[in-house]
Length: 220
Length: 357
Image (tube, rainbow over all chains, first blue to last red; front, side):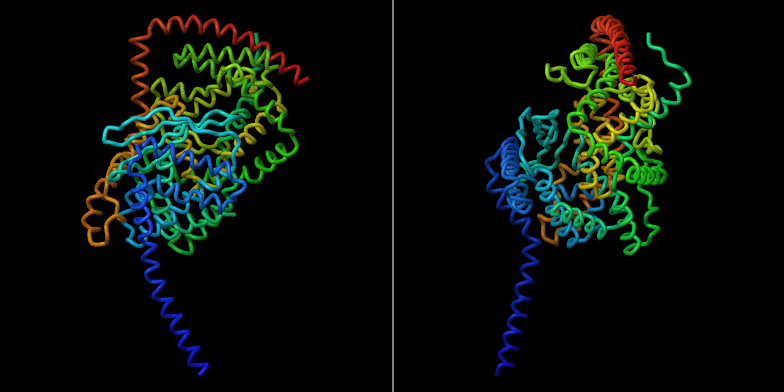
């Protein structure tokens, strides 16, 4: 009797495990899309400038609470802030350049997923504490084909200001950050060179492995 | 006037080129370990020969990538085993305010070169400011140990001869990683020689140069750690960051955004994001997108080159047409500031001698 029960429970567990894990993976795939849609609703009435300023203030808040939060806390706090304000799917796409068409759908989803975690981890790691920094809005420029560039300064109390220029693009009704240019160094162009180089030399799996390694290092 | 003993000057000149660019050379600190791990991964997972695959889109800017990568590895090893331990020891032993003083001192000597290059680039106003900077810091700032000028609103500018050559229209040339000297472009080689020649620290004894070297490596510490933390391929990361930052300095921070837009425009505006569409639409959309995407990387190098050159030409034209008067007055100012500079040069030299003794 006991044996039967155990077997039954085991099968139920197994079954539910299968049933659960299946849609969970699918959910994971679509998580990003869904999140994007939710964000779009939140963002819908915001101008490009508002998106940037909101993100910057969220970032400063995390820095102020930085010590208290710890890495995991900062990660959690920045997670939604970054996903809301950035179009990470597009960024991941641009970053791999023409390799995008060579990788499979699953690989694309995997890439966007690890890239998202890398971006959040990098923020959580680099903006860990507060010592009087602030952002200053400078100007807003429209580009020829409907993009917007928000120019701002990251004001450091003890050092020269750092120029932060944000490139935004409208998707549907909503503005998303696509690129950040710090003192002339474009994050997107830098990553693009690195990622395409690795993809061409060492392939997709190595790229993902390296990104995961970075994520682990940030979390340490 | 200042006299520079020929022989000593020249041999130490070389040392100083080495020293002053150690900052760049060290763009590779600590990546050694990561690199070797990476190679292991590639060997186990893919054909080792894959490493030889040529990368078309980068060949224009970096035609000697094979050589450059091995030089990068060499410099990296040297930094890991020589420069970094010494620098760490320096940072550990020296109190913070002493480090700042030493940094300010060498930064002040570099301002002489900044003034020269301001003048050669026709930046009269900035030249006057930077001359003021040098004078204030050399006197009130006690031979440059304190950066008083920044406190009173005379901010530090970054100018060097490689930038001047760029403003004059000399093309950038291929990217090079030089043994000991680190990242450069062909244009940067004469630039570096000139800058070393214009720096008084090049003509004094070894202890000062050693200190300069330590200071440069110590200043780079933060950037080097950042490269370690952020880069997936430290070689490519260093190259791109170096080239982009040089462009930024050349254009004085004006042209970078539009240039970046040019590079990435097609991808940026291409709305074909796969994840927004379920699987069925993929193939047709992808093909459409791929056409565009292929085009872009090839364009990239050209675009950078053009973008760097265009503002330059405009700059030159403008200075010829509009501001001829301005140029002559700034030349008068330049002569004055040359006098001032040489006077302070003497002062600096005296003080250096005092320090030496």
